Image (cartoon, rainbow, N blue to C red; front, side):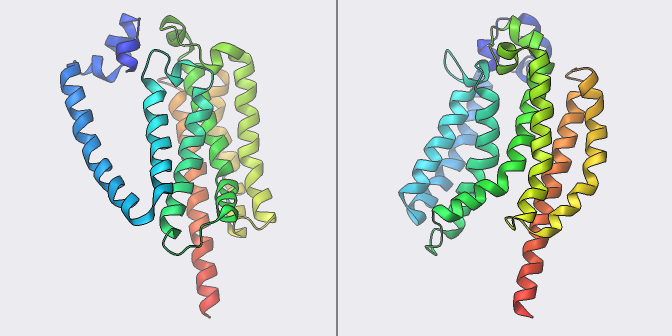
Length: 245
């Protein structure tokens, strides 16, 4: 939909994947419909096994996916796009997976949902930074295509300040959650990686270029998110072993 909604020929031919690969829209549509069938079948099976809550979560997820780039006013052309994507990826998906894993045990309740949300908060702010970096790097192209994103609304300078604040929260939340025993203490090891992650971000803070510095932000986000998830998994394994001994 970004390709169809675009008003910039430069975007269509040099930035859009469809334009770069010279794919026809008819073929792209066939691929989209074909790829949608399998998830829908799996989704129907999960709804049958777990109930109506899965249906609601599925509808919300699909709705966000469609509204992000479809329609006359897609989310990625508004000031809400960055936040909605970050929340959907880092909050909605973990909550859904947790519910699916616990649905048949009856152990998923509001307390579990809140715990999942709290555990996922560092990733939420990290992903929000990734979205902000995309917006700052694409600001000129977005203006040409009539996209009034968050970066467009608040300006590049304020967006960069928001980027730094979001990263600070992502960094600080991990030790806070560990001290509060929301996540395993072993996640504190991730603090040792902070200087390396910050070094990845420095070039982007100086200049926001999609092909040059934006990938470095994605690299930093990947390090934080993957390291955080792996350490939580290690902590869970250690806890399980300790309970057996």
